[in-house]
Length: 217
Image (cartoon, rainbow, N blue to C red):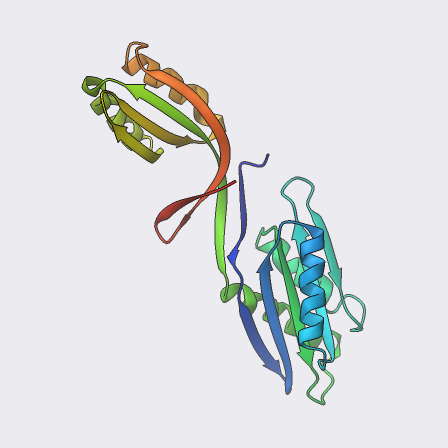
């Protein structure tokens, strides 16, 4: 699993106008090719009277699937330029459809490329983009007299604390990057002289959204 990637949390709609042609970009998060194609077909029905509904999507984090369509525009003037924008932004698990209403003036090859790319960028600007990171949930059970050392270490290393529970003992759940788990468990064992109970729970993706850590399973 890829440890970190950029994607869309909430889609958006952006619009640009060039020589009276209107380009409407709709951005949506997706995780499968079927979902991407569903959205493309849905938007084609919504904008049934449009001149073109061009699309591009990227699915997956390892060897991602990439597809694009010019939908009747001259070859490589719409879908591929849109896809290039997504690649340049290092995004995945999203689909973009740019709907064009012809304004009566031909834009030429260069003009079309610029228009579809500009619309895609505006669509992304109107969306909420996030960075998802892979984390391993690490549960720690320890005595009260050792919690100060652990909390200080966690703060120094900027490790995310998911939850804490105080009963007869203290139970913490941390979110640790897989690449750091060995060092973290070793350090906590040292700080507690091996008395803390450590339990590795599930791996999840997480992202910081509006200053809050959210998990994605």
